Length: 154
Length: 154
Image 1 (cartoon, helix red, strand yellow):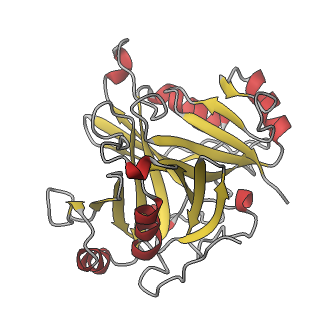
Image 2 (cartoon, rainbow over the protein chains, first blue to last red):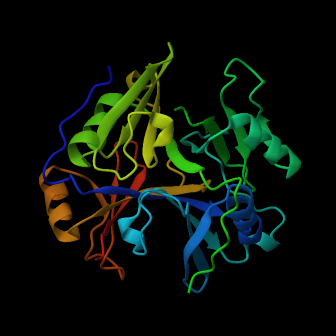
């Protein structure tokens, strides 16, 4: 049994709103997160020399027109111009020095999802059949951040 | 108006399940994420030389006894023994080389939340009154990952 800590009155309405990743090329990232992973671009903010993109699933149980009321948002930060520098790359947290590991999308059918990713030309780090853990896959996003893919159990 | 892409039939039930961060000292991290940020330890997995902790808000609209059906989970990976090496530290993604930026918790009342964090000895990167953006704060987790704190708008 997992440990459970009591929810305190002061924090009971806190929400895990988003995770932010920097991306080099917003066109590539928006293609990946919307057309391949199926997220919805729910908001964007142009800050002049940078631009923020907020992505989330339309069918999320926390879906809400007010962004701060939602959960499970992916915020992408684009520092303009990086996409034109062929030597520029972001650090994915899994090469040294390590830190951040991955984001994870759960899908109704892992085999079907992976077959679709293959068809769409997605780069795999680990297909379900590779290695010991047959029920998970890892794909790369355009910046080589790892995205874990797991099946939704009933 | 934000751009919106149509949700495809193939991806409509995908969920943004979790974000994974490596942590050096699980005692410090569990204290921070459960007692200070109020998350619930919903699951854990001992992998021998590593251990995984899964945290989420009990009041999340996606709360579900099946972990893969939830959204907005924070997974912490502890590689056992790192906590005993005084020179060991994880990379927070904001120092060079950059990549991952932060996680973000939205709270009903920013001022109240920050006053509570102060009382609990949380280290701030940015208090609401610092700099131009008066409606956000950044605090450090025990590994110096940044956690943005924003108010929930009505």
